Structure formats: C-alpha cells, structure tokens
Image (cartoon, rainbow, N blue to C red; front, side):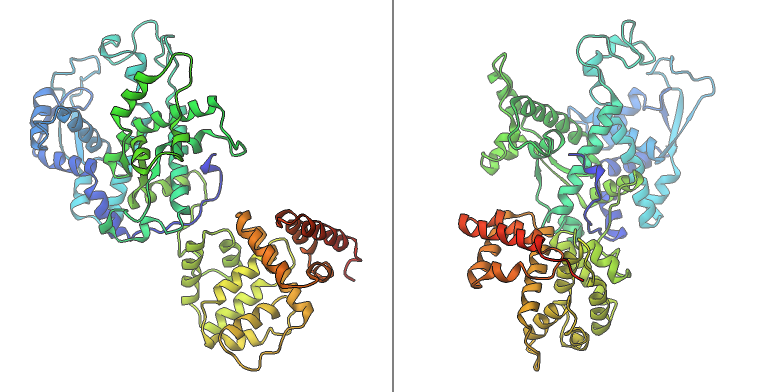
Length: 525
C-alpha cells in the first residue's frame, strides 16, 4: 500500500508555539544547540567540517557523554546536525582538500546565525531550523548501512571513495546492491503509511492533545503492522511465506531507520528487542522461512508484540511528515481548514472523513454561522440525485444534529421537500417540536432507501450493515414489496446489497427479486 498515492485524512496540529517547544526539546536539536554555544569563540575542524579528534573529545565531555561507549558517535551526529542547520558556521582554509589528513585542523567553526533563531526567533523560525536538520537526517538515514554492505573504512581511500572493484554505487558484487534512492522511497512510504494510521485513529491523534503529554494520545503502531502495510498487497487475504519473509526484512530495515530518526523528535520508537533478534537468528533453520512477526502481531500478547518494535509519530512528526507530503503534491488537510468553506465543499469532504475528524470539522464550521443560517446552507447543499447525494444527506443530518431549537425555522421550510422532508421531520421530532406533520408511506420508504444507500457508501463494516438490514426487514411486513416501488436512484442498488447482506437465504432471494423489479419498472417521467 502506498499511502502517498492517496488523499490523506485530516490531522490536528498543535499551535506553532507548542511545536517549537517540542522541537527545542528534541534530543538531536538540543545537543546541536549546546554544541553551537560551546564552539564560541571558535573550535578546530578538519577538511570535512568535522571536529578534530581533540575537539571531539572535549565536545563529548561538554555534552555529558564521556562515560557513554557511544558518546563520541552521538556527539558526531549532533555536530553534523549543527552544521547542516547553520547552528554552527564553518570556515575552511582556502587550500584545504578532502585528501588531507582528516585528523589535521583545516579550519574553524563558530556559532552560526541559526543559533540566534533558536534563542530569539519566532516559533515558525525555530520549527524551520528543526525541519532543515530533519531533512539532512532523513537523507543520511536512507544511506545508512553502506559501510556494512560495501566494506569498512579499510576498503576506502583517504577521500572516503570505494576501493577498486566497486562500481559507482559502491557495490563490489558481493551481496545485494544498496540504492539510497530506493531506500529513501521506502522510508518515505513508511512515514506516509504511519501518518495515515495516525490520522485514521478513531480516538484522535496526539496533535489534538496538549503538548505536555508528548503525544501519549496516539497508540503506537506495532512495527510488523507497519512493515506489512509496505509489503502485503491490498488484495491478498492470506500472505504467502515469501511475502511474510519480505515483511520480516522490511521490519528490520524500518528498525534501523527509526533508531536513527528517534533522536530528531520525529517519532517515539521502541526498538526491536536485540535479544529477540539473537533468538530468531539462533533458531533459524537453513532452507526454511523465518516465522514472520507480521503474523505474530495478531497472536501474541501485547508485551510480546512490543518486542518486535513499536512506533508512533509525535505531534512534531505529524507536522514534519505533513509538510513533506504537501511538497510532493499529496493533499493533507488539517482539521479547521473548512471552517470558512461553503456547505457544498464541507459535505463533499466530511463524507470521507473519519468520524472524530468529521465531528470536529463540522463543529468548527457551525461556530462561524448562526444556527438558522447554517441549517439553511446545509439543507440546500444536501439536495441532489447523484451517486454521492445519499452520503451527503446523511452527513448533513449528522451535522444538523448538533444544532438546537434556534435552527427550527430552517427545518420547517423543507417539510414538503421530497429529498429533505423526511430528515427534517426526524430532526424536529427529536427536539420535541409540535405540529410536525406525519410523513406518508412514500416519504418513509424513500428516507429508508436514502439512508441505506448512504450507509453502504460510507461504512465498510459488513457486520454492522447486516444488522441494520435484518432489523429493517423484521420491523416492516411486506418490506420488499413496498421498497422496490420507491422512486429513488439507488433503490435497485440498495436491494442488491440487502440480498448480499441478509443471512436468511429466503429473505435474501426476496431482496434480489425486488431489485430486479426495481430495475424493470418504468423510469420516471
């Protein structure tokens, strides 16, 4: 599944000020900023703008990483982030070349202009510094693993180029070639799928929560589930052993990537348990496919699933991935975008929004209008006989349900409307309005067909739809004999669906016969 090939559901974004605070608290930016201040007035760098050995040791101590076995590597990563974002500015000697001794000083570094943005810029400027660094880390992440695949430093010359025997991509023919562009596309797809899963979450994404909770409102996604979304075809009900092995491989690639991305603040990540990796490697039998975590994710207890890795976008990550999607031309709306839109545009969007997002978006739209004006606009937009009209009317009805008695005049105006009279009566009766004329049988069944057509278009849960169909048939004697006569564009389609969904074979056959009658009756004049 390629998430970046579809329109995304809307997300909620924290205010810029809160996002900026999250960016400043991200470990990599925090460390880079501390290093930038540490450079004052100047420190020595080599020909590739890296800290020379003595300065790297001092910088490692300044960050408090002196006792950390990975301290020097963490410091080097923070330094690269500082250079890429302009938190430090590097001046190299004019005669410097990459072939020089990399332990020899070749220039100096000092605090850069971007450091001033962190200290005194507006929130958007702080976020842009973070985004600049993120782009560099994403590029570096896509290239990670080159040393493992193509040899260590002993296989490279003084400039870092591959030794003779390797092609222009660094591959020497022993093992698979590593294509950074392909890996970048794989990572982009994974982030897009993770964004989609975040936006679809029914409870609402973390960006709707407070900044203090650090994104705790979003449930983390098991890494096997995310890997499966990258590999398993949408139309494959039961993955083959070969596909499951691909899922395992994709999962380990994602584990490598997310370990590198976590310090940026883009994701909260619980890595794959190293002991689990060792256990599976020891247990693997030559010639057999390893047991796929994607399959286990639905069978193991929660604590066991978490051993395979858990990941979620942070509120800052939602912002970062969304802006990347927009740059690639993928529509990625934000809740509140439609507050000033027309009712036509609102209904068009809400029919495809997740329930929680539709509710909030509709509420923001209503806040800008008086109840009676909002009701009139929505009702006017709900008219029509196109394929999407039933879903638009159901969405209209759900949005109108949030209005109080002040909107009553607008609903009474459409009581005689063939398409809107039924839903108007429902709205008025639910609010205890008096003198509401009873609908005739034709209007009752027209509204029934319209509602079912909307549910079929908007709800992909066959079990729930089946319950609705069974209830309707049970409550109305001679249901099918009445419904096939309903003058609604979707009558035959609804009856076909009822035939598929009703569990009783005799009743299902009645529904199919009624659908045939609906198609055979004379068209409207």
